[in-house]
Image 1 (cartoon, rainbow, N blue to C red):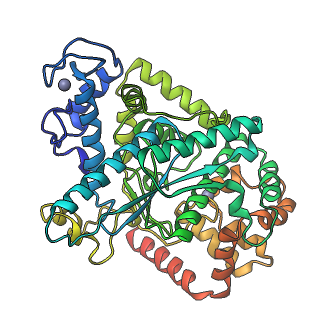
Image 2 (image 1 turned 120 degrees about the horizontal axis):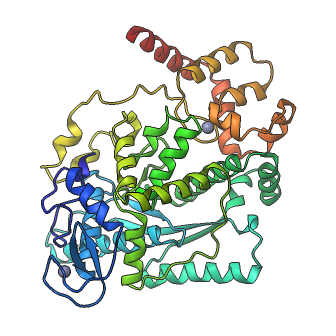
Image 3 (image 1 turned 60 degrees about the vertical axis):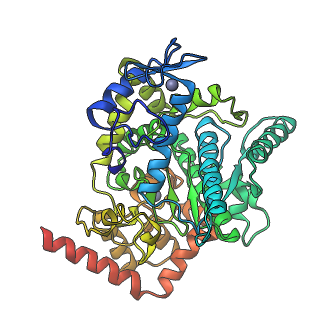
Length: 457
Ligand SMILES: [Zn+2]
Ligand SMILES: [Zn+2]
């Protein structure tokens, strides 16, 4: 993708002005040696040699240069993809782990710099974007003692306030269920218990987390959601999605920008490795919180340990996996396309977005009810035929779930479907209800899509 194309120093991080990011051959070299982050005496960039030094691309970097290198990657991803505009109000999804901790630090820094130049400018024409933090509290599902949970949440709050964040949203996961009924906690537990598959349960919680973030953003007027997903996490997602047969929708999840949700989602740390981010937290004494991490089972954790082993063997593997997935055609919703959206960008960057490229997958407009995956051709055909013959609403709900969710998340035994769907957040099922009342719009879209597809073949 575009972020790496301007490499100017081989990605070894020559300071905050450096436009280089990890890319191509230079990136492989960098990534490879970053696998052996270690302490050395002299900085290959500035010649200084105090404190801890990370070895990158065979060149030792002092803490200062290493930091500038990572901040450069973050800033380049944000600016060159128009992730944050001056009028935006950004909601950062904060787990307390090293990746989102670094994202918090960096976006706060970008904002501080924007405020400085706003103060300095005479015109003060452009506003400065806002930043808030959201923490989705899943403690209802973990067996930790209440005291420990309270301490972890206090830590999260103190981290936010230490950075100067004024708006902190600490929201229980079960809130996504309680729009109509009061017993969100009961519904959450019951729905999770109905899912037999470990992996399915984890993926279901992941979908609820996204819904929780969307809900916080919608209710409080945030215009972007920023995630701390880093290259290592995305590499794991690429492999597990492949194993689960989610190849069609995978390209949607590995891009910097994802506008398929009500509130667009951006991932500026996509080019940074997990251990780089942990090292930065260590060097800068950035406080993190991992008490509430829950043990993972199923395919997701298998893949994570597999990626870990791949990395020990060859440290550039994570980058290689992510880069390979990025070669898949993205969807039209993987960029901002509203008229006038890019007006705030420096003029040199604008042409990049104005080019009409055909390098996109055709998108039918239909997303999975649960996970939000774009529907592939066979899922669309199934939906279409179900609509003609569906007797019960449950049939319609089922047809609105992608194959992977049907297989992993829906309870085994179709007779349980009705109860399961009745537990799901209305935000999900309500969309299908609306669709089935106003029959015409989505059907037209599906027909159009299928026709288009026939033309191609
Ligand atoms: Zn240095
Ligand atoms: Zn799905």
